Image (cartoon, rainbow, N blue to C red; front, side):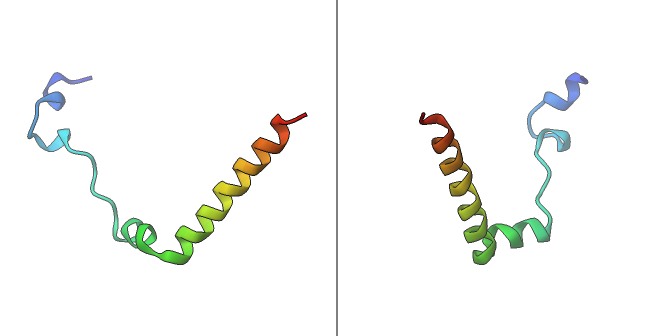
Length: 52
């Protein structure tokens, strides 16, 4: 690892900017709802398997 990349306020210090598609998907309500449903189903599956 190069020590110059750790200095604040240099170009390599900042994380990459999200693409237009990524920003769109983060604000697209149907996609968010679908991901919410999938995450809840995964949690329910985990809870069902943990109870005997």
